[in-house]
Length: 210
Image (cartoon, rainbow, N blue to C red; front, side, top):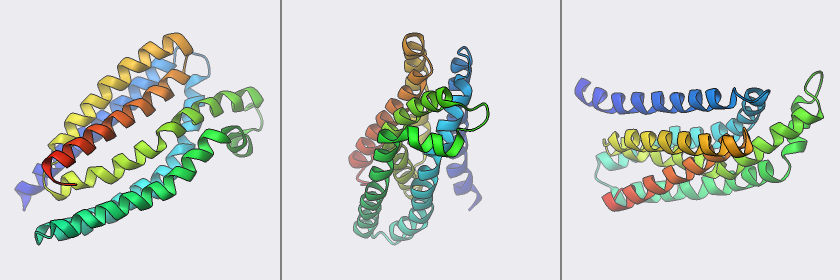
């Protein structure tokens, strides 16, 4: 009904808004370094590909499946579906993460190195992509774990976790940017993603959702 719709919609809307603020803050921070916005942008486009193909695709399929099982109070069946989805996501995301970490220069060079995007641009973008690679599995796990909250009609924790993610990411980004430049923003993004996954996992276990 309409009440339940808004109950689920507003936390999801606020969480998405916070994530967009997260991106905006990162862009503002790196704008103080020449070329850094472009380097992070191109690196972001690459790691978003496996994130969409694996994380987003699985989460879209997962939500209606576990929602149906939970509505019939088949919690064991819902947990089984979640566990299998987590296994498949890891089997698919781990090789992608390894590729981003081990051969980012080759990936960036093949896709972007032409014209004014020279070898130095490739190297800088590859450094950022490698750091995003360390967080790829976490980004995908976040996509898998988030629908569980909505299936149980308890989306509020996702909002609080998004706020924590924003605060951690902003703080670490500022600190690391002053020391190592734009690479620090990529590192902080991966760190905050892993922190979010750990918090999500602990909450789901404690509530008996997982």
